[in-house]
Length: 380
Length: 199
Image: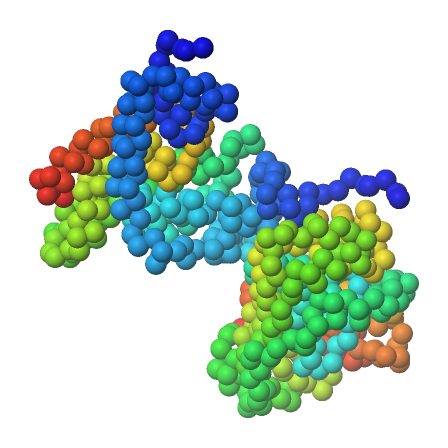
């Protein structure tokens, strides 16, 4: 049936721009077949739209050559008000996790910085992909009981070989050099190295500075899917659009200050970068489940962690003890062995963060109070 | 098989799905949600920003997403139109201050860039042809009523009628007519200026 009433201008425009419902499009199309006047009106609108569109396109200067140089991370870095940047306690969340932590000299510093990526690789390394950049702002302790440690041991190798079949590539590894004093350490390290004023009369015996270190590894989508499936989760939860990408972990420099009964490590800008497009909580949840944390709990923990800023510190709770301590307004963790004389012996480690520096104080046979006092006496 | 537990939104949801959930997460301070929203909207906003402020599009984008991060819209506000409105408003502010700067620069003898559709300030010296055409386009937009200019910028940056209506506080049903008039006004004015070779 022919329609006598012609569509108004708005409807014709909406037809031109495909903004009508399918039904309405159909009705108008039908009208057009029999109304020359409207055909003419539509042709005119179409030509007008094309002209205006191509003229306005001129405003887009060399569109192929240009692209947005901004990133979400940059916006967030600009946006984070100072109180959120520095107050690491406010959003602290207590959680529990996996993997065994082994403090060993300079490696401990690297371990602190990289624990999220490599020591803790299977769960964590892949986990924060969405965030692009990981900066340590706070710590989350994940306590593992012996069954969970065993479970982790049982799957760790498989997870590792699934996720990162090739060893991480060393992108930068500047040598460690010994320097004469604090001033020389500051110059060599390029940041404001702190020194404790409370040292029990012990003189610092030496300073060592290690330059930039960076490691990179590629993570494939298939590997993540496999990880999820190992954790009894649906591998299809990894977005199809996510093709994988590289993970890099780095620090700009690291200073080691050695005294007879303690050692202070300062790691500057311990960051990790990840490919974008993946929900970190999802991979984190897989990690938690792999070590035997019940499904609900794993989900809850993964969701609560701020994956962009939280360094996961896995603690085997049967052999290690961890206490949360405040160091000069920042959250710190005091980690010690429960079994004196075995393994870690009486070694303790206190880790905390301030600004862009991650601090680690290790000591042997020292009381907790003393360690906290040393840490609290740092000055710049 | 055990019954499936209640699940969090999946990664697929993050990429393709529920924006109101992401907005809820963003309001709770979730940076991940911000990243997803940014990935989803930044390209489009940047295209719009280019049309609004020209070479300062990156700066405008930054301001827009900073506002989203710091002060996200209240629950129930559709994000795309909100971002478009913020882009247009902040873009106008930027151009106003650029014009003020340009005024002082000219007085100091410093060349201005003549950016933006509200800018329309004459650019001294030799300019590329495309720059000259751009200037004409911007001048025309600057001379149109604001609503018409905004309608054109949004439509030709890929916004749907529904989003334009939301951004401008208009009824969706009125967009077609208003857009047709805006196009006509733009085309006439542009052709007249281009013929005279004015910019």
